[in-house]
Length: 320
Image (cartoon, rainbow, N blue to C red):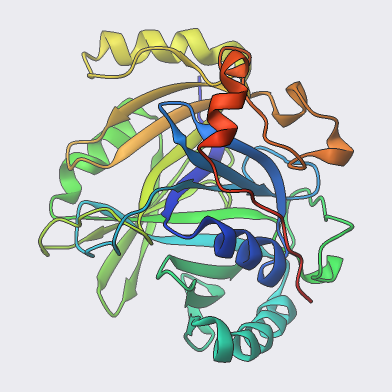
């Protein structure tokens, strides 16, 4: 029984329309599901992914009218996105530098970090992201309608960085409960970062853990809400039993329709999710038209008129 990688990462936006423009236009991702937060149907839940909406490729956003995040510890502080090679990192540096003059993107210079060329940047709401060279390893599923050439498109999620005041307790959860393995550490300007791998490892299946004595972060626009880890569909009940046997307070089984989930918090308060690969986003829409309309799981469908009346219309905009 083993986690196989990062499933998705969910963040917070206060400007959904601009979020769509940035992630489909500037970053060239595909809007694969336009739905609502199932626990708060007044808010969009937007999923961006690769051309096939593959598990492990999607970064998602709750649309909440919140002020900017107050940064600090006990939070996810950097989300890496994988691109295929150093030439892709250089291409993205030029693209984001040009786009940033008008879009409010904060952009660093490319740097070698943990043996991989990495480009840190922030989206217009301060979401801390990075593009990382994954060496072209693993499958890729470009989106034909992306404004980004296929050779440079974002391939999926990469390492996720957690910043906590007490790494020891979080590390115990990663290794003892979730079965990850500590592989190495590397230095940053903020201190040493420990790398924990799951399943096959590599940049699509890593968590980075940084000790950070700052005051706890306060979530808002630009923050990360939670990170989810991949499991095969057949292992879902076994993972629910594992959390229960370990006496870890959790949500218990939650059916999100597109995948099944288990939620719990690690000792420093960061929300973790364990999610199945299936059924997937084609459960209610054909692959060719994913994200074109508001999708609702069956239990919310009878409330469609009410829900749509409470949402602002969104039109995906693809910029060059």
